[in-house]
Image 1 (tube, rainbow, N blue to C red):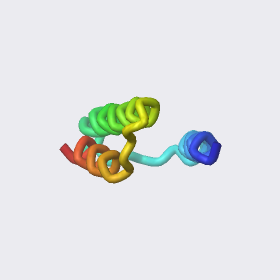
Image 2: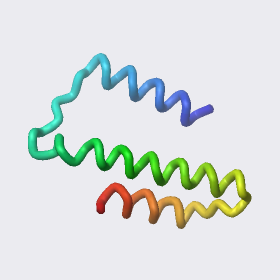
Image 3: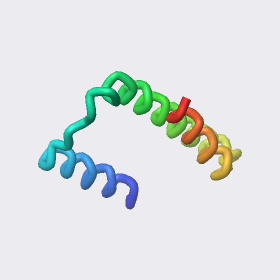
Image 4: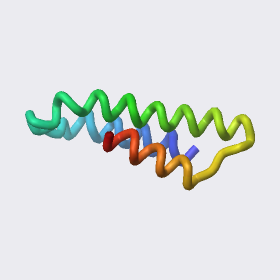
Length: 67
């Protein structure tokens, strides 16, 4: 519930404040978003299978977004 509330608040702030993304970052942002979503869905699958590890999730999320 807290995550959904944070997502809604973050989306609303993004729509109202309209932050400027630097030009050098714009080509990489969609890739980072997809990589982050990949880590989140992998964590959801692991949670449903009963083998979720928060350490593996954090390492996977950070490495996917940075690479």
